[in-house]
Length: 155
Image (cartoon, rainbow, N blue to C red; front, side, top):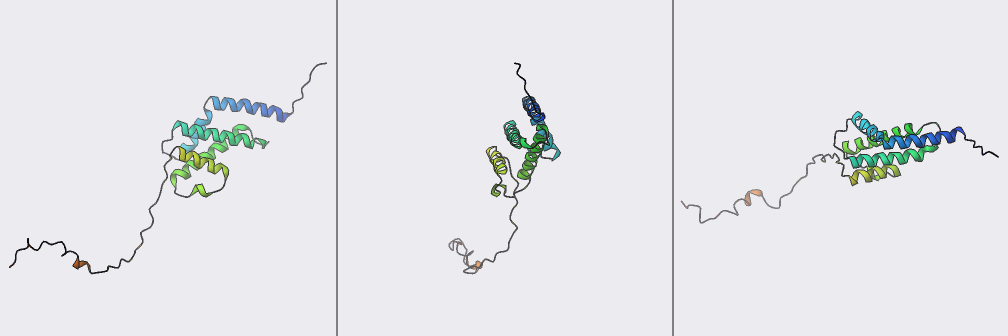
């Protein structure tokens, strides 16, 4: 009795997606796509290869998690995730907004990566504020305290 395997279209797509995933990651295509996204967003700070690789691994993990979406292929999901990581890097390095307070789990993972690789943040100085300073004694009293009276010629 011959063994007949019935594969649905979904099973075939899962197999193709896993093969395509392996090829994309092995050839470094994901890393190239991330660099292209960063260039398109005009992110000009230097990022280490380790940081970029970790961002690609995180995007790959998120794309595999979203694999239940039957309308998109792995490549489309990965490109979307890489685009999201590039926009995060742009927000992280281009502003001083507090991203670590937001509760989204994927955002927290990206904040951890940014802190691990010490990605720089822009920060703005606080706006100058006028504060009244009340002296306890007039300022003209103080400058005469340090004069050596022996050095001053007497007339």
